Image 1 (cartoon, rainbow, N blue to C red):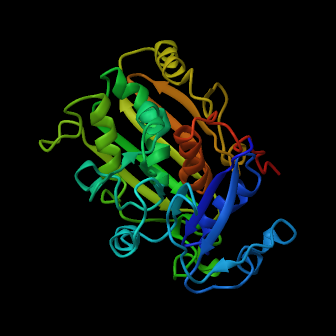
Image 2 (image 1 turned 135 degrees about the vertical axis):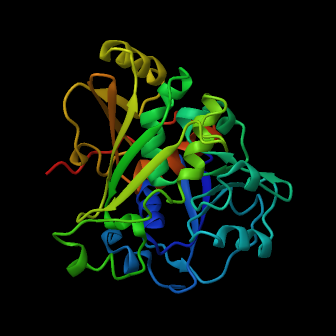
Length: 336
């Protein structure tokens, strides 16, 4: 590709930005023009993301260049929740520049419009056609991605009733800024439930399920999603187990899942028990089904920083620019 996609990144020092940079440096169709960081201006990227030594001599930009078609084609926003909206209110961005936001600021339909920009919810397995023509993407949350990918085929068939789901996530899901529950001495040999039944990703999960199964998870609670998230004593990955009631046999359910995901390259059904090491450092989501009586358990695993964040953002970029969605994302898992 002669004319590479020119990339700008805002909020370049965090975990998701670091993962995004790693992927884009190896992407055959992109060129990183600038990576902005308020706290690390004029420092080499490898001063913060020290695995990048020898991969790039790029430095963090302390100022933001004019955001027009002559500078970049797409802007990735890798800031904390609330900061993307504030940035776009304060910073002129030419309407021709595509935006992919990794915060939760624009994920919900009633928050998806800002000025002349409308953000499409960027879950390719749900909204691939809309993403292809979108100018602005709201990248899904990591827990939301893993839970939805385990439930979308059931919602598409109108089979969802009450869902009970648990999920455990690595410490990188909490971001780079240290806190009591991300400190190594607290996290190691320890787990903890948090935000029980109130996690912020529930809103986007219910919105997506209702898109395929109208009326599901509506205000009268006909289809509640009951979610208990856990902090795990590992760095990367999310493991979800969702329980639903179904009278279909396991063969019928497997056919549903295989049919739903047959054209989606990163989601695959496993006949064997799944685990995190199969997906860490990849853009894959693996799903395993188990059934006892009328209770179906859907297990799903992803890397929270790749399919749950930066890899999915690149997948969305590929779709927006007419590339194969796997471009630059055929990554090797860190199995051992």
